[in-house]
Structures are given as C-alpha cells and as structure tokens.
Length: 207
Image (cartoon, rainbow, N blue to C red; front, top):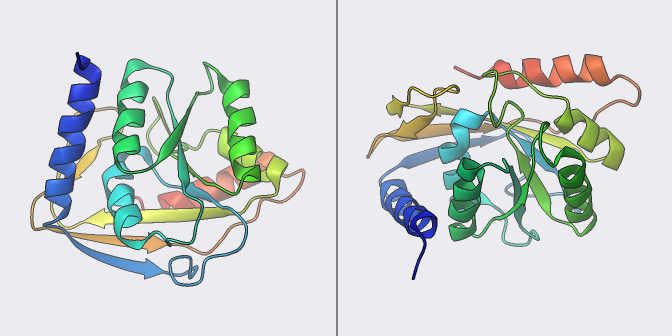
C-alpha cells in the first residue's frame, strides 16, 4: 500500500505540473548557463521561497547534456516530502542541515560534485531566517573549488504562504521572470566576507 507521504508527493507534483503548463516563463541568463553550460559542475543558489520558480526553470531550460541536479533537503519529515517531490521532477536529493547530518551531507554533496552533478541549495533553508545565508554554501563552494550560480525569480502574481520564508506559489496563467546571475567564485580564506557578499547578491533581487 502506498504511504501517505508518497501519495501526497505524487499529488503535489501532479498539481505543480498542471500549474506549470499555464505559466509564462522569461529567463535572463547572464551566465549563459542554459545555452553554453560549463564543463564543470556548479552550485545553484536561490532563496527557499523561490523553489517553485527554479523547479519550472529546471524543467524547461536545464541543458540536457548535464549530468543532473542534486537538491539539498532537510532531514525532517517536510524535507522527506520535498525530496520525493523533487524525485518526481527527475532531481536527486541529499538530506541534511546545519543541525542534523551536516557533515555527512557535505561529504555526500562533495561526492556528487566529483561525479559531475550540479548541486541546488537554498542557503536560508530549512528554517531561516528568511534571506539569511548560512555558511554551508560558502564552505562547500570553497572546499571543492566550485562556482556558485545565483538565481533570482519574480512572480507577476503569486500566493504567499504564512510560512517562515513566505513561500510563493505562482497563480495560474501568471508570468515568472528568472534571472540567472554571473558565476561567482569564492576566494580562499575570506569566508565571512564571501558569505556577506553572496548573501547581498541574492538579496539584491529578492523582492
């Protein structure tokens, strides 16, 4: 018998696919990632409340020549549900956060990068504060010499949930504008400065 969690993940992913067919998507790819992707993997960074927008962009614009995307999700029940939804959209996941399975998650993400997969991280997740970049993103990028690809998204019309991040779900037949920023390289030995810098870049297009 199918579990409640699996059924809920199936239902949500189905409804999202139906919703996505109605959305007009415009992408401003300043890095050229979708048309001329690099040979090496990247870390895709975006705020937690933009997950819907990035998922749609992945479905329509992710280069087919890439190995695939691995998403970092929380080890909580909600993270498990998100991991199953991402699997329905052909994305793998690694479970972990700063408070649980942090070191193991970093090891697994490092291995995925070594295998050629792109990594998707919401650096203010899984519990916030909203638009606050936790240090895990910077540590992973610096320790693996992997470039960060910042992604921003704007909704013409959306529902904003009463969650810690103000999670946004686009309304049917609305438009989403996604900006893929230039690649960012993390300097050696400048962790605090780089954390502030990348947070500022992501905040610049946050609302």
